[in-house]
Image 1 (spheres, helix red, strand yellow):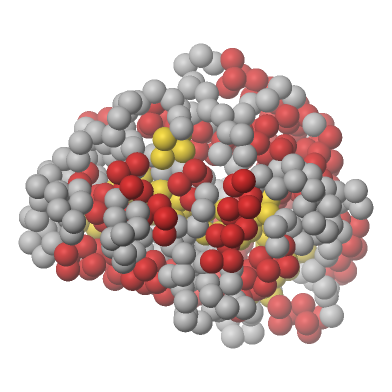
Image 2: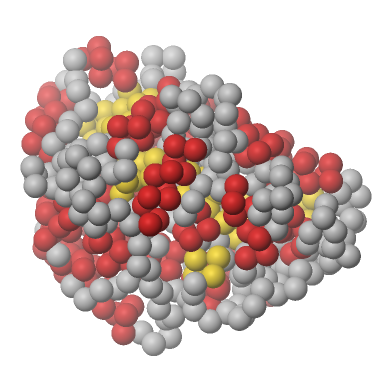
Length: 483
């Protein structure tokens, strides 16, 4: 997959579908993608388990939900909050099944909260599996713990029963949740990633977001002289925010094939020139960071940015909503793409990472899998998706659901960035869901690189060693993607 600063030289089928889907998210000039916080297996059952707690099926009740069957929903309460569940999705479910009780559980410790329950067999019905403490989806699937969501995507849409749910979603959404060639994950939120800053502060200071890494280093020096921390991320729980930037830069240098090869555990992928060059460039930026930030969590760093103590911060488009309560009137969120490294980069500066994310799963052994499937179908209705955007400040993968909604400054900035990017979209990474062990090692190595303990060559060598270990481990089911 090679790109030039102009027209893409080669566009895969999925890239073309994604390009079409991106522009369909919102009608009019504010068309854009946006989104949320967050992150193999083979095996599992060959077919989708029959929904439990089921009643006879009908056009209005395609999964046969038992009218009074209780439903338990566990939501990761991070950047998206949980009011979208309590104020929108759960009431919509209750409207359809007034005799059913809905138990809501909100937590930032998904794995800590739920792993003991999976071990005991007492699992909830529906889970937002996200955040730094998410469960390993690949491992869950290989143990037969996840429900195949094919029936959900093949069910009639709430809004137009003549259409399947899958046909109402941004193209590529279903594929982004595949494990062992089946959709076990519902990626619900469409996310844009980049470097976030206070547009009002930058205008006041006469600063311009950098388009190259040379400009980045010069700007960092200027910002440091002004008494601010030029660049920061939270090393304690969100180093994945930073490794996203390293991977995005590698993809801009080489093209999306490097990210596909990393997902596929291709020999030598981590030691390719694009990854080394990206790691080295970001390590230079790391020299401008405050080392104490390695011990902070994301909200602590984000609040410091809101107080104009940090200039640039790597994140996704959930950030503005997550910080809503701590953002003063003098702060206006805006996003910039990651800088270009060389004039020969395969993708232009405007290229951004945009992907369906924020994984939701349904335990195969839940007491009310039929209800969980219906709950997900409601989420994927226009009413459910529009309400989510209003409550979370993020767009969903439901095409056209955000029509008529006003966009906040941050989300408008992301929409503008998407328009500028055009077809130059950095692809998603699947290893985060497929190989949790590899993802955990990447968090560790990213901190070591950015806080100056290892070189770019060591970073690449350490990651390649871990990838080789995962590849050689016969107990880990291997996955593959082609686009």
